Amino acid sequence: MESYYKREMTHQHNHADKHEHGHSHEGHNHSKGNPLSFAFWLNLAFSIVEVVGGVLTNSTAIIADAFHDLMDAVAIGIAILLEKLSGKKRSVKFSYGYKRFSLLSALGLSIFLLAGSATMIFAGYHSFFSEKEVHSIGMLGLAVLGLAVNGFAFLRIKNSGGHSHHGHSHGGHNHNSQSIMLHLLEDVMGWGAVLIGAVIIYFTGWNWIDGVLTIAIALYVGFNAVKNLIATGKVMLQSVPENVDVTQLTEELNQIDGVTNIHDVHIWSLDGSYNVGSVHAVTTDLIVKSEQDIMQRIIQLMKKYNIQHPTVQIETSTNSCEFKNC
Image 1 (cartoon, rainbow, N blue to C red):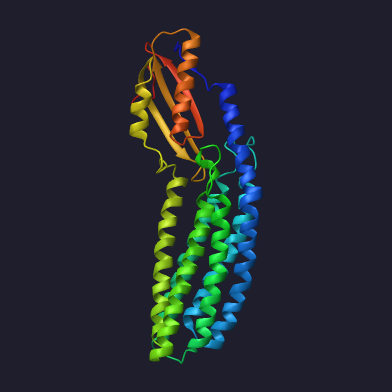
Image 2 (cartoon, rainbow, N blue to C red; image 1 turned 30 degrees about the vertical axis):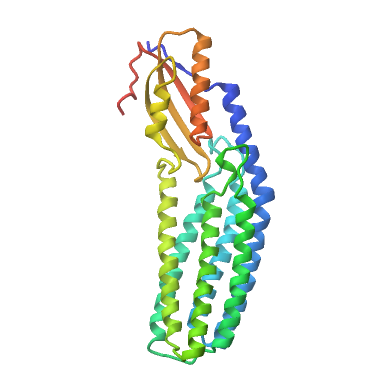
């Protein structure tokens, strides 16, 4: 019969879990909820202003960006709901909690933006064959307003969650809020391009610049949407988080006194900021107190490597672990 011990340091493990979850809820309720709601209503209202302004100025770029902002508003609205759901505690059905629900918003947002980018490219291409006069002064005014609105929303979300709690990374932005910040930043850059285009059209009369700007904005948005889609996909496929060096962690774990071998190391992330890890540690024949000390050091080291939910299995050198070479 296999005589190894599987322990998680019940008090230590549960305390860590409560500590992390406590900061998570606090961040959602006070730091992220209000700025996301603010960004939602701001984007929704401004997208309506954009549609009217785009029609009045005959600007395809502005109308295309109005669709983009509308998609952002819808995505932010969904994000608010999923953020609240992701803050729920674990249940019998969802033993790790509901944190991954926030990834659904990031995934949906990226897909929406890819569809919007394709629509913008089609609209920009079509404008070359039906060129119309663009009212550069109105276009310039909307560009300035767009920069102010989206820039303000971006800074509200960025400043709400960019800090850390007691040194760990869970207090920062997850993939959901990061994706929303990314799209608001893209809006800011897009309006910057529209501003430059309006100036060029005013002084040169080159109305075709409007179509070029539309396609350029669409390509930029589409490129970043693909990047965010890949990043979100990696989290959903349980890829090792980019901020965790597994090789270096394994080397340091093997240097702990009393540890003879480290194997079956698994590290993944629930939502892009809250990381989970498990490890098997082989020790020499020790008394129980020494074994607990080793487990404590392993857990502390794993937390140092941004693993907020560590699980450790202690084995003796006489055991033959079936997962050693898997």
